[in-house]
Amino acid sequence: MTETPISAAVQKEIRTMLFGLIAAGIRGNQLDEARKEAVLQARKLQTDSAGPAKVTK
Image 1: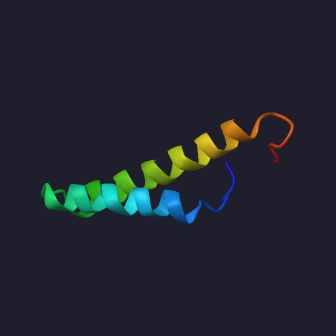
Image 2: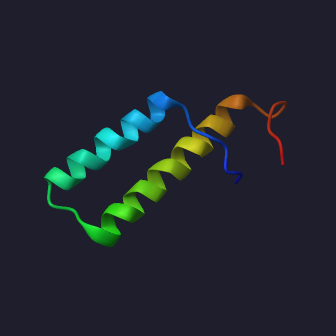
């Protein structure tokens, strides 16, 4: 998977999710892993929605 930039709207959604996790008491490595997973999923969805003609290696 490439380091495709994610949109500001997706960044805002991820940030909101992370604030919710912080409020729930999640800290440290768990919070970092949740952030990484959210970014990877956002990039995967972005790539999947681009369709096969637009996917670059």
